[in-house]
Image 1 (tube, one colour):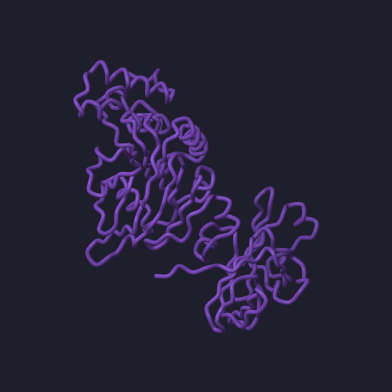
Image 2 (tube, rainbow, N blue to C red):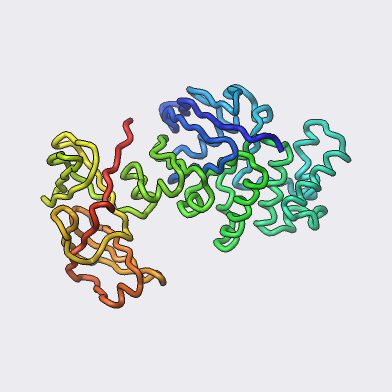
Length: 362
């Protein structure tokens, strides 16, 4: 396989008429890494992937693969290969001819291209099905064939557009493990678009969270989970509660924020101008159902919902300007001291478990 290449996206925008789908994003994807572009529908992640591939023109900015600016190159000349969400296999061709198709287009002789296609099918553990047609395969098998077809060109980077979305939940988990193993075996750069937080966390070395055509955070999965950069990331990843209000004071590395209900909360962070908007993030699994040990580290609320999840219980509380403040507790802890919908509860957290969230500037 070819040597992996770094992908450098430099101030890239995509504009459709009066609509800007991608706003001047810049991102370096390290060579040989597994990168997931993550975000809700319409956030610009697929447009970004298609601009890297050359299937979408770049309105402003450049894309560099290794040392080469590929902005104006056609897809076949970029050193990338793309696997589409639909797999787009040819129904009338057997698997060997499906996999070998791009080599046929390049004029490679039949014996050579079929031999290479069989090697790729072996890599995907699909050689036993070489003479079948796509309709005779399961979804997971079709995906392996689509991967083999993308990889036969020896790309420096493989681009995957929601490759697991058509699979059932059990198969998704299995294919996730196979994709990760394949990327490590080949050592090439993978860029994978998904709207699944779990998928991105399981696969990626670099998670790029996008919203409204902008990058909110680009970091390793653990950093995105532990320290979301913005309120959007905190909410989208689902592991932090967000409290929104205005700064009251800043002193000795601590910011005091007031929510509209009049409650105040304290957090370590850079000084904020009085009256400036402030967002705090508190890990859902670090919230305790007990009174706060110090001012600004908790509040009283009303339980609005309880969900049993096996190993844990999710409790939703109304209070402090939030109607869905979430507490995740272990099942044994919950049943040792249960609460019910409608109960008044005191919630608290440790000072180190609250973070000051940033804001993406337009």
